[in-house]
Every structure is written in structure tokens, then in C-alpha cells.
Image (spheres, rainbow, N blue to C red):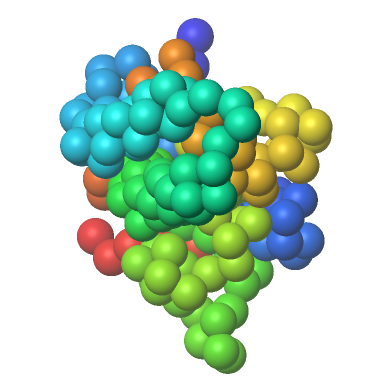
Length: 171
């Protein structure tokens, strides 16, 4: 048996873009989880607070609820998703940002949200995404469900190998 440690996926969010991700082992997923545990705890605390609120909320309570939801989405976008992408993305091709071939850090900072969400979901699912899963990966709700749900064991050591792509990290 040959265990593949990486896979290349053609993006559905950004046609013409492909990316190579690491296939995370259970040990690697636990390591990634450890790296984002503080941010996930923050998301869980906010989620529990939202769940405790009752129907028929006052305007002030609805405003506070929305603020908490935005804070939770920000934790996913700014803390959890970048860590997952750095842990599992090896290389990508077919994308420039402002005319330049970006590094992985530049992709995370300035890349298209739909592509980042797609890459993050693919890493979390071990590269085995169906077409419907790939289409749905762009939704922040999908990522929040993964963060707050049972499928939150998704982590790996930082990518050290290269796939030979134009945007592979330097060795």
C-alpha cells in the first residue's frame, strides 16, 4: 500500500487555480488542533452564549447577538482558518494577486475568501471533497459548524516539503 501524503485539487471557487495540500494523519490533526485551541475555545464560548439567549429578544439583545456572531466569524477567519491553511497547504498555481505570484502568507492575507474557505475545508476533510462539499465550503457557516462541531480535529505540522509549484514555500 502506498499512503499518499499530499493531493492536488482543482479549485471550483476559482477556476484555473489548483492547490496541493497535505493529507493530515490523526497525529497531525491533533497537532493543528493544539495550535488553534485558544481560538476554538473563544468560538465555543461565544456559541454557548448565543445558544443561551431566548426568542423574542429586545433590539439591544439582537444587536449584542449579532456582535457576538461577528466576533465568532472573525475568530474563524483571522485565527483558525489561517492556521489550518498554513498547516496543510503545500503549494498553489494559477493565481496572482495584483499581478504578483503570492506566497502562502500573502494568499491568506489578500486572497479570495471563497478560495481560502475551499482550501481550509479541503484540508480539514483530508482532500477528499465531493463537488457539493467543495461548492458549500465557501460559506462561513460551514466553517463555523466544523469549528464548533465534532469535526474539529484538523491539524498538521507546518508544511516543509514542496510540490514544485510556483508558490511552494522555500525549503
